[in-house]
Length: 174
Image (cartoon, rainbow, N blue to C red; front, side):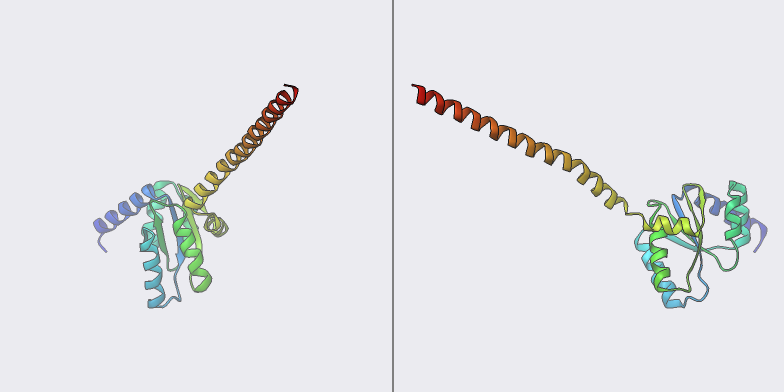
């Protein structure tokens, strides 16, 4: 590859690293074509870009971006899944895929500019999705409101009983 082509590729990798919210680096050795095709489909459906990149060019881009902690992860056959909209999607998909395909090895990742080790990627993969977290927040907000409604209903009911008792007492006295 000629030098100008390498410079262009390094710039493209740097742009990806700038715009990515979450990325996962994997060793895909041992996966057959069918498995890689299935993995690419799952990632594509989630809006995740999956690229096999040259380590030397990726190292150069990482060094220029100040991501020196990423360098040890760039050994052997390396592919990177870039998540631009959902930082958790690449980790979830690749972690689940690695469970059923042990040939796929998670090496580490990147979350909003911070380098993660394998355990960090797995912990990220175990987080609930954004939708699940929002649902939990809404449920948490509804619980106190429902409790307040029950208390108010009980208070109103007691007030009505008290008024009824006063009315009956006045009728009895009259």
